[in-house]
Structure formats: structure tokens, C-alpha cells
Image 1 (cartoon, helix red, strand yellow):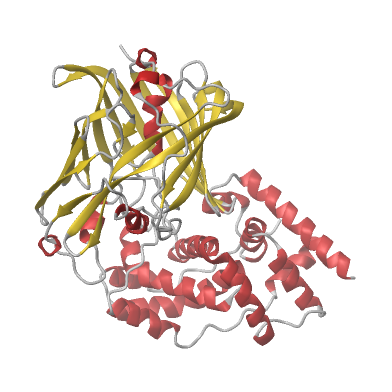
Image 2 (tube, chains in turn orange, blue; image 1 turned 90 degrees about the vertical axis):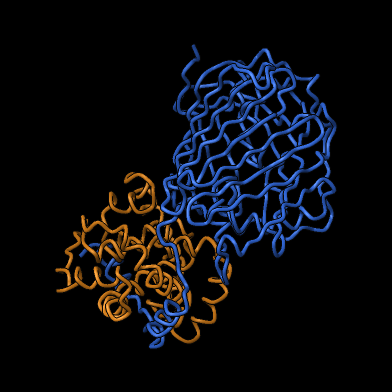
Length: 180
Length: 360
């Protein structure tokens, strides 16, 4: 089982959060520069679409000053932001699933690895997973969350998260095995 | 390195495109122009946008009532519906994005209207029922943050010296955009029609009062605090005086009626719901009534925190802009609503009976 080793929080994040909470655009910009790329990667992996991922990050940062009113600094800011981003991404997937699927094809032509290559096949296999399985796969295997954390994030039990991961891995193997 | 480790490593190496350079400027522009996003709201967005779509139905229904008011008094400004914010949550359980414009034809009851004469009010009992609700999105995201719990107390009393059931409903929203709501409805003990209802909401700054005679209804909204206002209107009820109805659009209101309804295999009946009001144009609020069609579709054994129950499975079609289909499981012995489920395209809203305390 993989263990997530979280990096130390960037210096000044708490102060920036405090200033952003007060409505400072400069602080919001600094927070974006600190956390935006990581949040975009998470949103992209969950949504499978660059455009949707940017929309997610846009919404997260536009809503951040108000959301920070509820942030009680009990946990790390980066972890809190990731949970927030995952949640927004999942909600957005629900609302725009079809559109995301259409965009994916456009996007693949421009950015994604070519099908037929190992990476391309793996990406296609991940994209083929239903949202419920892909979410757990991304959060566990790529982002490194524990099943307990994923359960808390998705509102499911740790056992359910474990089961979904097993199903996701099984499907991935089946899809990839079928290509060989 | 085993197969799983290899797969994990490959997954982590899947390429991610670069984020657009203009994303931060877009974010800052959005903030500067007043765009706000509520990130911590529950899984179900609140019903106000839905209400906006449902209002399209209202204008087409003969019995609609119009409440005139000056929206400028309550501070409505571009892009911000403060009245909507104040009233938000008064008609819960309706997700946004689910209602569409009306087809142009007002819905008609599909089955015979349920008349008071067909009910058995003696089956109603005093007590307290507590329900918990969850929303599951895409089979993944399960939340209880929209309506955390609903507590319903039924007690015998009087209204205008007539025997009545006093039904108090307290809804605890776990959502930073919405506040707890409490309402009390006085229901005539013989006809089970609502006679008087009062709803408090938004930090108790809003108070909606409805009263119904056999043919007419009146409604007023009182808002205190910084956006003080008073609005009222009346409507002719568009259904017969003996027809049963509910005073708002919350299908779970049926739980009060279920014990008295003679559910049986193949039973079907319709009733009206009224109580929704929405700004339909500059300076107007509108209220309307829509039918709710009920049909017993089968029998199930249902386990919920309050116990295991033999139930009728009742399918309910609600005509709000577009049809919403609910399934409610009603215990055959007591007539309690044990479980309710609303299935949307990608969401399932579920409410289950958590506990029951008998009355005195």
C-alpha cells in the first residue's frame, strides 16, 4: 500500500489565506500560484478534460475568499483545498458529464498521448472507467489518499472505497489486457 | 516492483496539460466583476433556480394568484435575487437544473382527485417522526449536507374552535447558504385539508402565513431586518372544496396524509399542491397549484434505522415544469412514510425514517 508523504506547507500560506479571506486579490493570486497547478492536475485527472479542469479551478478560486470563512485551520490548507477541488470537480462531472465526454475527443487530438502507445492505452482505459471508479482510482493511486480519506471526501465508507479501487484496477487490467 | 506498483507508477506519469496562462486573470476578473461561487453548499443546489423555471407553469394555471410588490424595496439588484435568497429553503427538496420550461400545457391530474370522504382520519396518531436525508451523485458522492434531518411532530389541537391536527416540521439544513426552517400547519381533523400554515425561515427574519377556506387561499410574506417588507395575495383554489391538497410543494407533506389514505394494490389517486411563489416579472410574485399523481406499484420490505417495515411502494409523479418521479414506501400497518426516494438523471435523493416517538 502506498504511503502519502505530504510536502511541508508553503511558507506564508496561512497569512495569504487570511488576506484572501479579507478579499485581497493579490493574496488570492499568490494562493493560486502556490496551489493552482496542483489543484489543476487533480481536477484534470478527475474530469479528463482540460477545459473542465480549468473551470473547476476557476470556481474554486473565485469562491475561495468566502469559503475561507469556513476554514478553521484545523488541517493543512493544501489538503483542504484539494478536498474542495475534488468536490467541485465531482459535482461538475455530474452536471456536465456528456459535455466532458465530447470535449475529451477534441482534447485527445491536441494534448493526449496517441492511442496504441502504452501511455495512450492507459489513458484511454482510465477515461473509459465510470466516474465512481475513476474518482477512487485517481484519489488513491495518483493522489495518494488513504481509503479512509477518500471515504470522507466522497461520503462513502473506507470499505466501499477499497472495493471501488479493486473494481477499477480489475477493469483497467481487463481493458489493457485486451489490447495486448 | 509488483504489477500494482507498476500500474500506479504509470498512472502517475500520465501527462497533464499545462494550465492556461490566462486562468488567473480570468479568476481575478470574475472576482472583480462580482462573480461569487458557493463552494461549500450541499450536494443538492437549493431550489430557487428551479422555482424560477417552475414559475413558467404558474402563468398558465387559472387558479394562480399574483402578489404585487416592489422588488426595489428589498434591494434586488442586477445579478442578485435577494428575495430569492430570503425565501430560499421554504420549499426544499427540489434540485436545480432539473426543471425545464413548461411545455405550455398545464398538467392535469392523471387519476381521480382524492376526496376527503375517501379518507380515514381516525388512523392519524400523535407522535414525533424524525427523518434523515442524503443525496448521492453519480453513485459516488453521498452527502447529508442539504437537509440534515427533518423532525415532524403531530398533535391534536383546534383551529378556529374546530378539531385540527397541528403538524410542526423542523428542518435542519447542514448548509452554510441555508438556515433552519420551522413551519406549523393546522390541518382540519375531518377533511385533512390545511387551514392555516406559518413558515419561519432565514434566521427567523421571514414569516410566511397561509390560510385556506374551502375555496380560497391567502398568503402573506413578512420580512424583518434590513430588507423589511410585507407582501400578500389571494387565490381561488382550482379544485373542488372536498379535494385534499397540501400547502406547499414538498412531497413529503404526504406523510401526514398517508395513514388516512386507503392504500391497496393498484390504488391510484391525485391531489393538488399549492404554496409556491416566485417572481414572474417585475414587481410580481405568483403562486400556483399543480397536481401530484399517486399510484401503488407494489409491496416491499424496507429496513431503515427506525426498523423493518412491510410497505406499499407508492410511485408519485410531480408536475413541476417537468415531471419528477418519487417513490415512497409507506408502512402497511401504520401508514407511515418510511422511505422516500427521488431519482434524477445523476442524483438520488433519499429520506429515511430514523426514529418515532409516540405521542402522549
